Length: 255
Image 1 (cartoon, rainbow, N blue to C red):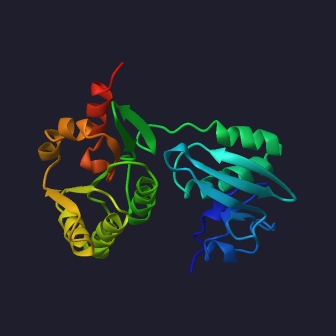
Image 2: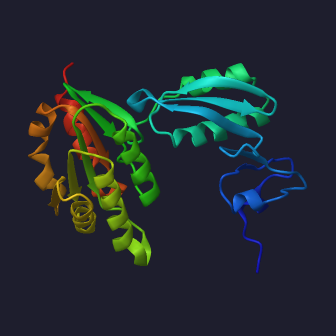
Image 3: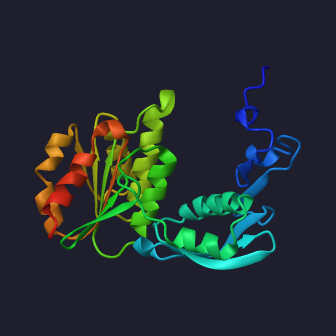
């Protein structure tokens, strides 16, 4: 078949930086006549990490090994999946000649943007704003972040789009994951999220699960949820408009 790989658009002097933990990418031996630079948790990669410590909403500590040298770093955005992102950034920075200390400072200075693991404080409630987009993998990763928080936990989850023929099964998988994450309350919003809610109830009959068809039904519940404090994850595909939830908490937090 015709060559359609993204590598054909790489400049002649460019270098491919690939995720060595991905079995398909790990099989790439050469791009533009040069071996790719691999990053990942696999020690066979040139850029890899160990000593990973999850500190909940405070982020993740790890040690990054970078072609013969190593340094410890605190990744300020929560979620162990951020270690892979930090490794990708370190690998690219290495290609541009940055030192290990410059890379460490860059990672530790990372700030979340709205909709992507952005923390919003509203009184005693911490809202994890991850509503920019969603797919089954990112949903499960975000639920894992919520799992490592203290106190009461609430997951507000919405429909995921563009999943094709498997959309019902994939929503069911996320519902089961939410139930196993130990949340105190799971609120599923949207047409497809009914399957998420049903799976959560089946996985944990003791879990408090609500299903709402429309976002407007949820908005009136937000003041009471804010009073109860704890941590709340807000996540769905962008078309669900969950940024309205975040706007509510941003507008009601103390100034």
